[in-house]
Length: 153
Image (cartoon, rainbow, N blue to C red):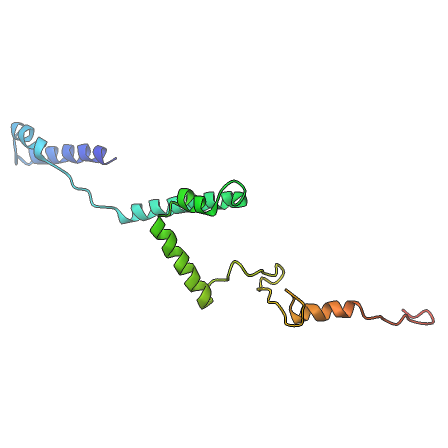
């Protein structure tokens, strides 16, 4: 794309210089080989490109997630799909550990109640993985209720 603009800019410059009588056509032939264009790095384009690449890699990693442990290892996904280097893997693991300790992100090794989204905390009374509200509800299920007498509903 830049080559196309280079030819366009050169043609416009040539026309302008000739029309203003700054140079002659012979001068242009001598000078044109020595004109170079330095394009600035486009930050917006680079950011957009990086964003699209990351989005595609994350989509691919999400699609491969059901196959982790069956056909692919987590290390393979990190290295080949997400394109993380050894140093990036080490840095990310440290950052994740730090954020778990600070409570910024949940620990992926702690089971989560699907209904509430809250971590399931083991109770000391032997009821593993249930909170006290769930235990009370289950105890209520086993209480016997009196049957109404005399046709009462």
